[in-house]
Length: 131
Length: 214
Image (tube, rainbow over all chains, first blue to last red; front, side, top):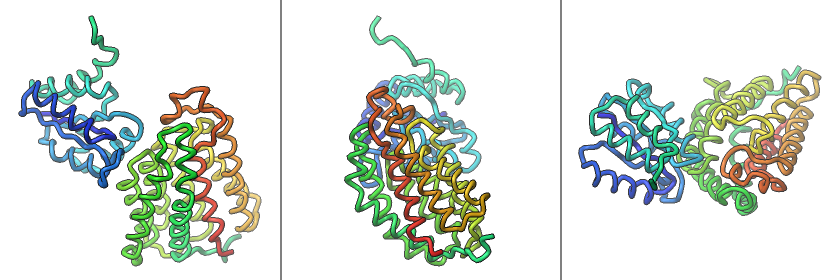
């Protein structure tokens, strides 16, 4: 199953998103939060992201969803630090953080491929919340 | 040219120690610059990163120049937290590359170190000149270094030209509209403020001149 890593500056934000998603989709979905610095400040940590990717990687791939700014750069550095086979099967997606995460987790739980999971997250850009 | 200008590990150790001290001293100033157009953490984050570098430096005494700067970069990457972590992390990790297996480098190799470091920042941040980022200090500095070397200026003068160009480049960010980072969201309102990344980059390059032994 494709794993998902939520990269946020805030541990509370990423853990909160994970909590909602796990409740909606079930705890079989492989989702981890890599958020905040090692000394509990707001920020992102490339080494923590790398570690969380390896925790959810089972061979099918991992989708990283960043919140903003340096989360993207830290995630890119984490991917570059990874070794194969995880490295070429870890994608970073440009999507809304929470909506993208739910859509990706849903697709992943259906056993979809990494490409399909990434596409699902991307498709939430510009999504209507109010009909 | 520059055959006598050999820079040993002691120079680089001194530079990093001095940068760490300077970042501590200028912490609040850098954070104030960042408060105006960013997220008010630049000085604070950098000081946390460099404090850790200072603490761990004694363990790196036996490393070659590449290994030393790789450790500096990895420590900043792991500790800083904000955008400066991946950016300065990339800078120092690449900066050391030409010093692989070496305890000293030539002046040409020092240029190569800066070249790799600056290019790493440009690639990591996907930034080009004129976007109100640290690239606006680093890129002109690197170009000035190359030009001064081609004109056969003495090593010290090359370093002075390098730092002058960084200062002018940083100064020029005041009139720029930000195209990267959080300041980008401010649009026109980002004008009139010195970019904190360009300011810290200039400070760092100044240390390379201050400690320069020739």
